[in-house]
Length: 297
Image (tube, one colour):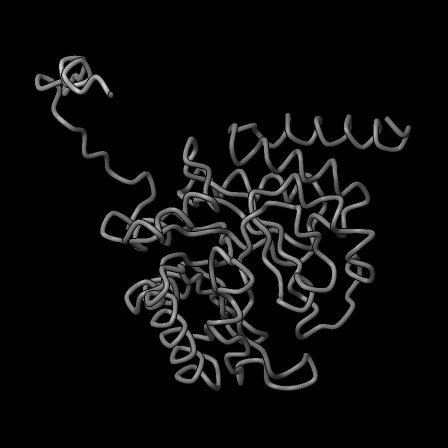
């Protein structure tokens, strides 16, 4: 027979130690529910509150752009070095090994190609399919000032509503297109609108003047978009400056997979974002890793 009296006497309820109620490490997320916080904690490193996303969703409107011709050969080897992967469901199902246990930020919009008006997008993924693929976040473009601005904002709010039902955060991407500016005034407007309407993360571009006002005026984490391909030192400098001015991470694509040493660039960017490595030291690390890579080490 069980010794119930002994078990009772052995219990220790630590009556003198009050239960802690810790806050959540990510800005703007304190009132979210457990499931959404858990997903955010997979995307953003809880120790640094930052992330390095690898963006490879360009093909949904650009086709097989340079560096993404063979995702299985060029990109899959880079995935273990990223904190999160931003991609489409087609690439996820067809090419990404399920054993790569990285949080997925799923591109959920689509429609026009680079041959048409890009702001005329529709939602292109059903929430149930996103759940089947175990995604950690949903994402769509928002074209503030674009021809189909209202439609793209409505896409985002619908995605936010769907995500809230299943505790999946939404990342709004402020798309500038060809005709819109990238100054702090515009970026403040676009990022704040996305946050006001419910996005839990905002991805936006860096601007040299006033970027700190963009991050300060947005109540949710801002992730910097990598944008067009830059020389490696310039890309590392941009990432460093964005982090120092309040960004919670970077979501880089072309500045990784179009580099002549993508693995080295991934590692250098990671050091900048999570360890605060300055651009000069990060570039020296990139050159060393590139040399090792070329020698097959």
